[in-house]
Length: 490
Image 1 (tube, rainbow, N blue to C red):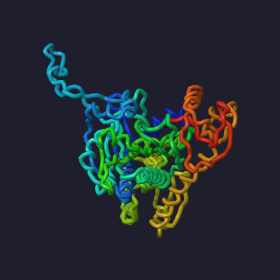
Image 2: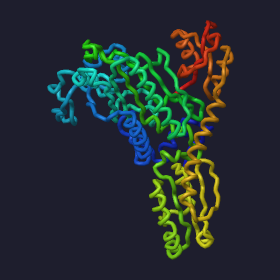
Image 3: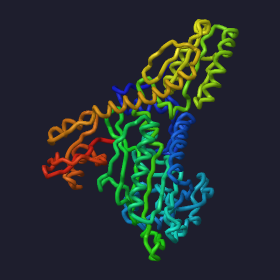
Image 4: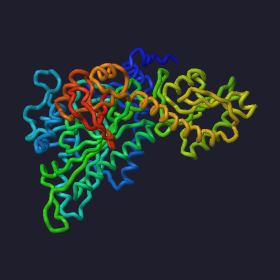
């Protein structure tokens, strides 16, 4: 099987694109900047959805759905919000097509212009808060904890499958609270939900932190984030949680009667992750032979390949292996007996390696007679021959070990690629090497902008629980009380 995957060392960007396409995760669409998520890629996203949705509901949230189209006037009600999204908005101006009287196909009907133009949802704060003003009257209506699974459109100029597309899938939580403290606690709680999900499911270590004012979500008072390191050393923002203060409540006049009988504006949060996490999964773990998927998110856990020379042998192997598939299924482990005679075993091995299936079993007639089976793990590419007795329990433990090993490997890589810079010369040298830089910053937007202009590095976050230490800003030489994380990013 010719994988035709560019190596990471030769061209990391092309390696990523090759892998997305060759592993059957997604494909390009005829619409610029949009993608088709293929069944295997969507299977990974469905597993992410299921795990996150369970956690949202465990923390008291419920799902709802709001319109795709937003009246243009809504976006103008919160000034910083529209400023942040204006350049990315797709706008609907007409509602009908007609045949061109000159015979050149169909054209927009000039008489079907909308009274008010509609924005294709880039995010839903405005239309949701317009509804909340009808739903919230009293402190008894709070907190309001709602999430929606949806698609959004942001007209990106430079796109890449999963990482940055004009249309993508995501979830967005929008909550309303009676006090600022409750809203801040919600913001921090959901950041923890994202961080635990990234580490426990994606096997992806993350740094929890706060964004600088320059990098905050448009319309937020404070933005919290989780930042992850990819194998090329660049950063990827894996999730954000925003404390919105009363900005949207005031813009849409969402007030409630408090326990003292006084009118107050509610306090708000929003938080979200997207199909960008599929891209993070690929870039954090995969290799030149294909995907390496953590078992908790793999659509298929175990591929079983019988090796035989005839139908009689195959039937014997089936009698042995079909009960194993059923036993694994009962344990919540997805397994496939690949008895397709049109493909040779070597082709199947390469295909499952490319698609990142965590465990592969192979059994030939010698194994059958000996009561053994060959087992290969994708993360380390190691093989061993083990007894067939108790193999289901062995696989269960092996999947847990693979999940933990992938996290440990990613953590060791990240921690070995976070380095301190105390001078501008050190910073300039380190930024050309893979990894994050921990350096002092004077807290000004001017310094942040200048560093970005000169190096293309941004402040990824100010880590939570950051140790305080007196220092000198790596660029300006002004006093600083803490280090922040700089990196080039996707």
